[in-house]
Image (tube, rainbow, N blue to C red; front, side, top):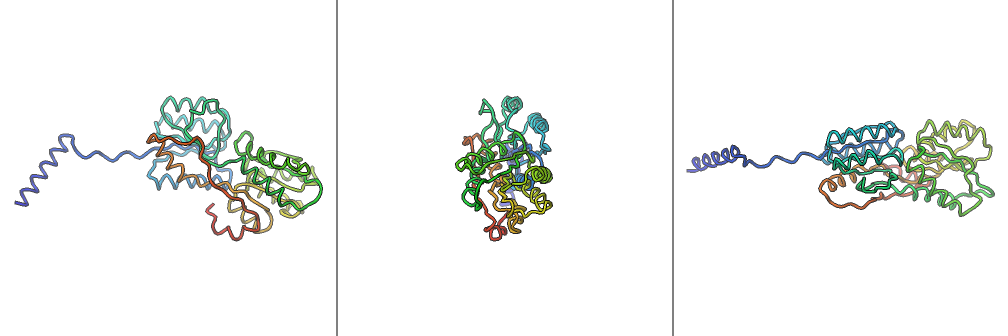
Length: 318
């Protein structure tokens, strides 16, 4: 009897499959196209790794493109993602302007766009769903406030500034936030400012030029740690002591910055968290499912003076 019942169930199951009533196939994984800025810094490398690891963990099919810090490469990548009919597009914009045309193409193709790490300037905010990342203006403010609160010298304070990539959101906003705070005390003034393009080598090169032309530099404000580390090399080669002869304030809080702080060569680093991958994957799934998102999602970050570096260093993941 049991045997005949099993046979009957088998026949019914086979009939259902033939009749097209089989259980539905598992849904295809979400495909995310991501256009990265490049690999210009320790921060960016950690950011890329976080995105790749998180996509894998979330079961998301990631199509990744490295723009090598060129906007035209990112635009090509986004157009390629549109042609491939990905589910969601995300990118970290190299610069703030010049995105409307390609984002209108994504909108026409009904592919939602998420900005990560950096914002854009557009008259049509509907071209992207949300922006996940740091408040760069607030990072600049934190750097300026630390300097006003902790600088011990007397008299005028001459500050040289290593800016990030020209036209990029972090360069524009970090500068704005820093200047906003230091203008409260007229003895603090930026005497020289030039882009170091967020790279260690350019930071060193520009700092060398600053040191040759300016004999009274009290403070260096670097828009990221990599430029600060390059500048530290230039200061040492000029026979000076970074962190003492020139106070150094930077942003990102990567491991290299903590090593410099523990060596007494960097005074403070304001955190900018690159580990945006898990957050991006969760939001990409929600966006695909049609769940509304706030227009901006900020990451939580701290500030690390050199005195806390040794204690904090073992906790750093990037």
